[in-house]
Image (tube, rainbow, N blue to C red):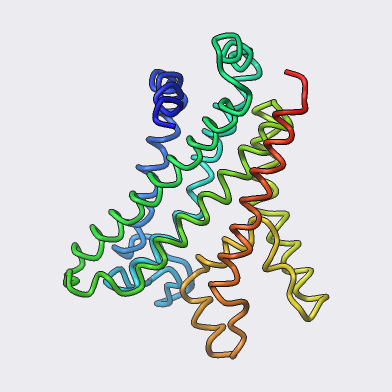
Length: 262
């Protein structure tokens, strides 16, 4: 596994697009959280600021994780580009010529998904720690609600696994990026609302992306759900559904890799 990951790193370490998008993710997420925590960014009329949320422990974990959900799309784009480039430039075939099995090539891509998931989760944790301490929080209170960091990891594996699977089927970066962004951030959200409105069982919460997105909902939305006594599915159920979808991506992608022509 370490060998596969090291080879993948050699492929991307000198790829400018990788560094540009990674840098954008890190800088934009940092600036966004800073703008909200400092009160610079506002949403609402008069003295009301809907974005004014607590950036001290334990609320900080839910806040930084929520915004990571949106900016992680930049990392998903990286995964799409890296994967589709393998087919566009025929490096996938070269890997097989050099002695790789198709299974190894596929697992190498999933190792990239796992590595990016860990890195994004760690970066979210460090941001939460930084902003909380900068706002005078006590480190002794840091452990409470850190489950949101674990939820971030589940969400990234879900989003990135979906992006990888989409890339394996489409093999064109432009089309895959558009479909991923439109579906993950627009279509599925609307579909979720429609299904939950039409069906009492609220199946919209269990759609591929939404099951993980619900783990990192806007803090104020969580408060409203508790006030109206409509909390929705439990976190444990959403995690289980997310894991099932991740497993489906893996199985479907593996079938595609082993059966399709290269």
